[in-house]
Image (cartoon, rainbow, N blue to C red; front, side, top):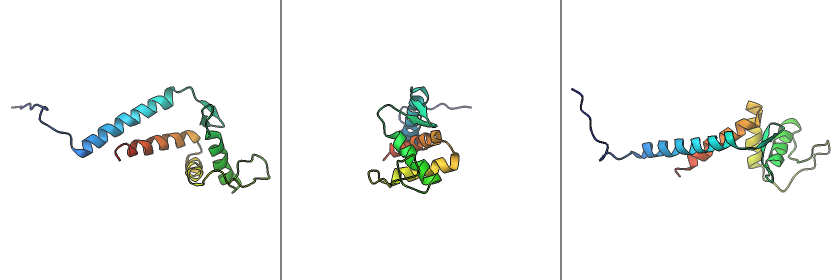
Length: 117
């Protein structure tokens, strides 16, 4: 015989809370990523007034020209304004997947994991 129990006195485990928050956050950001009216420039999601274009340029220059520079020409003057951490992250994901959209998805997943911290 089947026995149905009430969930009234059942508490979520810490892993259950983590999973619930993770999924809600992931769905929230995927929704905005998909329905956002972002312009894609050179395959990178660019918002007006954002610094995404500079990070995309730094990542491409790291991969193709081995230079940490914002220049598009062959002079490749080193950039000292940006720290290399995030451009290295962008370059690594772009090098593996050949798409800047993959960078956005990895950021969404990493950010979703930080919701429980």
